[in-house]
Length: 211
Image (tube, rainbow, N blue to C red; front, top):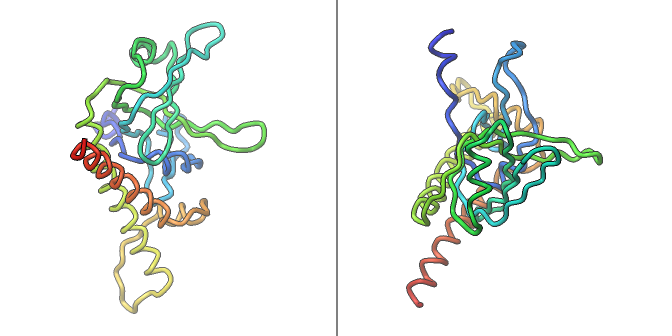
């Protein structure tokens, strides 16, 4: 096995609103062991994600064996996390943690098509750790920065498609192309989510200052 194959994919920081819109998945080769990617609407791919939020609810939804579902909330929406016998450490954290609690999760995106044709997106966790509020706040700021970086790259590519300049050497952005073809949601929506997320931190600071 090559060194490249041994290297784990970078875990993308992504807000819940964008993650839940990432309903299209793909592989980049026909190899059955090739990684599966979720296509982010801001024009990137994600084989793994890093999320931090408030664990608000846990429930054992398994029938024959334990299968834990957790609801994790960030300033833009809700992640659903599922862990069972193949993720024993993550499942034990969901079992033993009393909500509400801040948690940091690294995991893989998973999609499921419902009977009515909708696609639900969830996280299969590799690891879950209980963290403090400062860790959550830093994640919000860093995820806002990463999201804006993706949006700006997407918009640069999109502007070049609409008004190409003679002799332009604008970078190719294959994932932005895929996102525009697959999704209807304009990236400005995610810019608004970034603003909402950062304002939520300011509101907390203001409330603490006047308490």
